[in-house]
Amino acid sequence: MGWLLRLVALGLALVLWTGIPSAAVAAAVDAPHSFVAEAVRQVAPAVVRIDTERRVQRQPYDPTLIDPLLRDLLGEPGMGPERERGQGSGVVIDAKGLILTNAHVVERADLVTVTLPDGEQRDGRVIGTDPVTDLALVRLPSGDRPAAARLGDSEALQVGDWAIALGTPYGLERTVTLGIVSSLHRNISSLGFSDKRLDLIQTDAAINPGNSGGPLVNAAGEVIGINTLVRSGPGAGLGFAIPINLARRVVDQLVADGQVVHPYLGLQLVPLTARVAREHNRDPNALVQLPERSGALVQTVLPDSPAQRAGLRRGDLVVAAAQHPVSDPQTLLQEVDQAEIGEPLPLEVLRNGESLQLSVRPEPLPGLG
Image 1 (cartoon, one colour):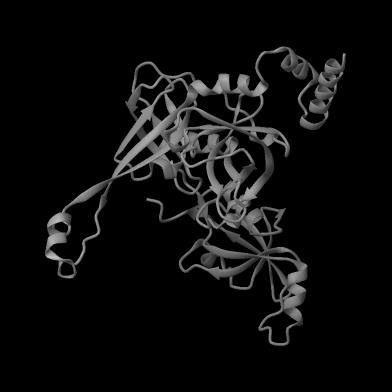
Image 2 (tube, helix red, strand yellow):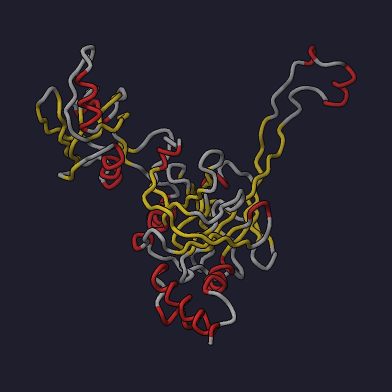
């Protein structure tokens, strides 16, 4: 009877600590495999390996600095391009053979080879990439295609939910790691990626090199994110994934237009809090007095930008956008992402102790072509 009591206690612990329904716990106790194995069984047939090749120009060397014998071995400088190879993962998301992966996996690739779960290899065609969200779409040619994975709802996630990462790290086939959702809405700019616009899912499920582009899956076998990077060095062991709800929106635009248009104001911003402002204002050498409240402080207005045309200036504090409070640059960016290109976006700005109402018309983010 002792072992039976321990099983009951384990089931209660799972219900309390993981949120798994008691019926699922009972089924897991009776089943020969875990809920992880069942989730993997559902999604693994849609996980593929992606191998890429691209031509890169070899850097020429100065022949006068190399011994003639070595020159014979190395060849003449500038002897044409070399082939650079890369590898990542992807997940099939519909019956038409669309594969969702990371933009950095396939960017500038001349050749994309997709290895299906049964080992068959096919040429893939990149139909669109979005470097800002690090997402890309690859299409399989006509013919038999793997079953598509079910997509979940990343907005329904809670910290502590199970997270299962699938992919092909180091070229190994169909590896699985288990963890939990460690955090939500992790701002990628805090990780040193200022050119991206992402609120990431953080997980302690191991995401190894080559897992990029593979799915992050919940306990029900639904894709909740696309694995994108792992933090190395200090803070190692932290993995991050792009929420699947964001990926859905990017997919729709890539399918329709082959690209994603992001609204752009032309501002460089820093966060401001009341405490930071008070400390600044106490400095007798401060050139300006800052409003002692939270917001997005304008550090730079880019020339010939929508922000410049709207009259924004360095030192302005943006405290509201589209009638929604702005507490930091990230909340302002979220409002900008929801804005329509060319349509007025009302901003409330504090300048020299006065509140100003400005209107800025976002334009397409330049420099992505």
